[in-house]
Image (cartoon, rainbow, N blue to C red):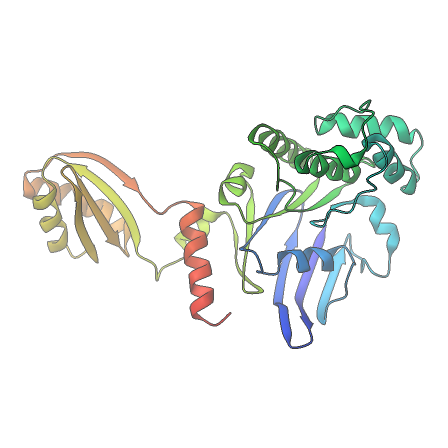
Length: 308
């Protein structure tokens, strides 16, 4: 659905995006990065709202700036909030449907508002809506024409926890239906809930892509950290150091050893013999950095050290 090849975008002397390439197909893809990483610029490039300084963007096989017909297959939720505040939510979403040439625009608008858990018969103007409600109106107008591809820039910003879960479930359902859903976020627990492929941006570059568990496994230069619960932590720690499979060990609690290793497979083979040699019982073995937060911290930290 989306093919991006070596795109860069600069504004004067400021490089916002540098040599980014990726592809997006059906399902949910999360674009993750801290504020200022270049996420919004990438999404604007995908939607034809700005042209790349170099590189190519293809949406459904065509340049979005030269083929506006592609927009009938795409729904956009921009980060910017620009609603016509003097009208009702249903009128606003109906207008979006009419601009897409839908028949029965009013009925389509009502369906889209219900999808995001808003009342289509609400008579209040958008000026009275909270930030979270306005966000959901933006999602409704992006859904109203039943697009194949959704591009959403921080769509969960300002939502309460219940509505956040509702929209996450909606995006996952749309992805399972075979639509493309590209959603940007800087909130780690949101991205983990998507259960999605991740594109990680740092300092305008694409730092990594894929399932975050797979990304972590490829970080050979980063020690893996594990917690081992045992009845004899000091004895087990000494035995593990002697096994040469670890690069760091410390006792973190009366029944807990934390281990850093560059060879997880070797450590798993060594931990039971080490426990036997130490006369220690193994109670639990848990990875401590096999999560998105650790992967994100490593990637962004590596990008900063490399001057990205």
